[in-house]
Amino acid sequence: MAAKSSFRRTHLGKRKLSPTTQMTAYGYNPLFSEGSVKPPVFLTSTFTFQSAEEGAEFFDEVAGRKPVDQDRGAGGLVYSRFNHPNCEIVEDRLAILDGTESALITSSGMAAISSLFLTFARPGDSIVHYSPLYGGTETLLSNYFNSWGVTPMAFFDGLADAPLTESLTKAYAKGPVKIVYLETPANPTNSMIDLAMCRQVVDKWSQSRGIASPLIVCDNTLLGPVFQKPHDFGIDLCIYSLTKYIGGHSDLIAGAITGKKALLHKLRLTRSSFGFQLDPHSSWMLTRSLETVFLRMERAAKSGVKVAEWLAGNKLLPCKLLHPHFLDDQTKNVYERQCTGPGSTFSFVVEENRQLAFKILNELQLFQLAVSLGGTESLVCHPASTTHSGVPVDIREKVGISEGMIRLSVGLEDPDDLIEDLRQAFAQARK
Ligand SMILES: *Cc1c(COP(=O)(O)O)cnc(C)c1O
Image (cartoon, rainbow, N blue to C red):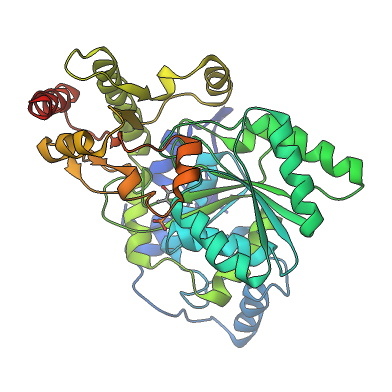
């Protein structure tokens, strides 16, 4: 079919198209929408079938009773809670960005994470996870899944075999380990997990017991999809809060999971049953965001380095930098093997006292005082009293989230303006 080959084009002659190119057109056929170059927002709750037979067939697909026709993406269009065109365009493009078979989007990052746990863990099972994780994920595990009989088991060092192995064995004593849940780099400390090592440790540990390996999942929100591709290191599923860099304009809430079709098929059924689908308008905005994701992330990362270098060298207030370019040797080694850039979210630590940190926050004029990250505007927050205030103090100390820590999300402003803002805030705070 000529139309199909042009809107799902992967090559030009022998040349494989770059993801950057794919973000502008892949997966949308203008001929279905009066030639409109950009996809319309399909504001509809339901779709007509061409015949009763087609209705029956599409229902078999969305209910998982019949394999999906490859040409129809996730299945024939039935009802917007299951599927809609704006969602499919985003999913096709996200799969390309992550270099994997398939993607699924959800109404938030937390809806993606909830879908994952609801699909693959049952009462009696356990989940091994790295700590610190995004606060919402830790809360979901400890306040909900734990009370439903799913045991979370944390490990705190992502660079060595032993802590993960120990945690797997401890979790296994409570019940079958179904998921190993990772997040790298960690927010707000930028500590790293060696993904290739995790794959090896999990497989070796499972083989020695004669059991199937649990799924290894990585929250790739901080560096993905541009600077880190966990699928290349043997990770089964990637999780995203699209709210952050991929949405990139702080104007929507959305999430995603990427990976092999067979796994995503199960997650899709969960999304449909629980009602975690993303609406057409937000999906459309994501299509627009994906066209600039490389430009935005690369520019923000470059500015982030400039800001971090200024902070490290400044004479007004000594700071400890938790930016990927200022890591210890062991972490740096993993960073260099696993990532192609530092992203633009990082923290710095001033004297161990909240007062000084608050003074700086209150003096900043350009950096806006807000949680979240990855938008066009630069944001600043105090993790210990906001995003990570729910983390018990002993764990906070253990992972290094101190009272003097300030987190920045560097956006698209001129980096020299941002540096001037930090300079004047430091000068005021020192008085
Ligand atoms: C924001 C965030 C989430 C949650 O995403 P929402 O879109 O807010 O539901 C999960 N993981 C990480 C790393 C995040 O930054």
